[in-house]
Length: 382
Image (cartoon, rainbow, N blue to C red; front, side, top):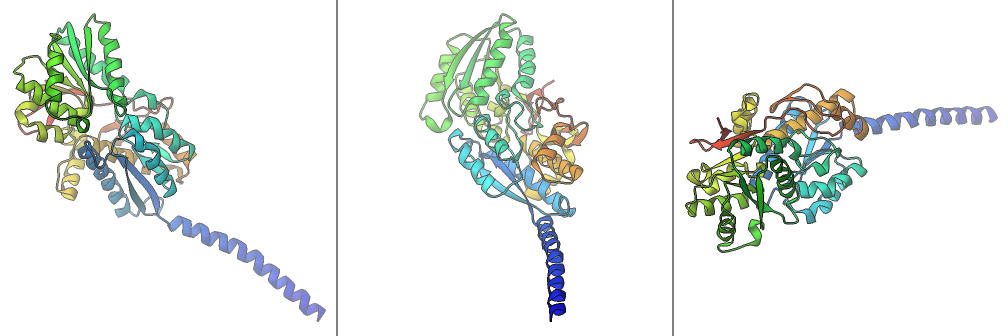
């Protein structure tokens, strides 16, 4: 009886020892098979919805292509959409939702005012951000493959100085959601001062907060300063209204629209004739970038629409993220973020991507002065 008890105990002990690792391995196996949750945060609705839809589609295409090849690390990628409407007041709420859904990374946000608030939240909760903000206030908070204020301003400065302008009047969205537009105007103003160019600023509100002839009044105020050039630092909904008011004024003062106005919705809303009266700073549409033409064709076949400007950057953001997960063999926050910061010579749809590990900024960017051609496309101005 004693021998039987001892044998039974030994068998149970062995069974327990074997069961532990077997269960643990089973759990790990299940984890390996569970989807990798990636969020895309953008203004999916609201006045900037055209940008938001383009961004979501870019990430959707990257996810679709990854899953068609067997996923990432042998796991399917599941995409969750996070709609912040481009509003600073929604930033933390949207980030908390992403975190609750166990997303390991987020492509976005797009709006600088949102990113200033919630990128630190993502980082504290170990969600890897590949953001799309351009303000330098988000320096070091994850990585980005699109241009920052400090990289855009020299292009605008050189263009404006090259026109021979002595006086520039800026129409600037300085509302709570205008972190990018204000930062861009501030930085450009300082650079123009070095050329002894006089700068006057006229404050404008967001399109959803005004009615009637508001923008016509603001354009008249700007023109009353007798500028040699108008610079418009707004998002495209406001930029459209300003461009229409400027065209209606019959003024021959040239205008330069800031980067956040570069969107197909600007052209479709303002009309071709009005859109062609201004120059823009920014990135040409995806179809105009040689490296992005295959992406543009796949995007068109998938969504029955032409890509805008930011969808291709969102696509590259997601593809770069997936490549670093594959490289490190993990979705863990630390290794993936470190690998992203060390990116060198990655061949993306927007060109070759190298990240400065100190700032998280992309070193080489196709920022130019653009015009609208007869085919309703943003192309490099010659």
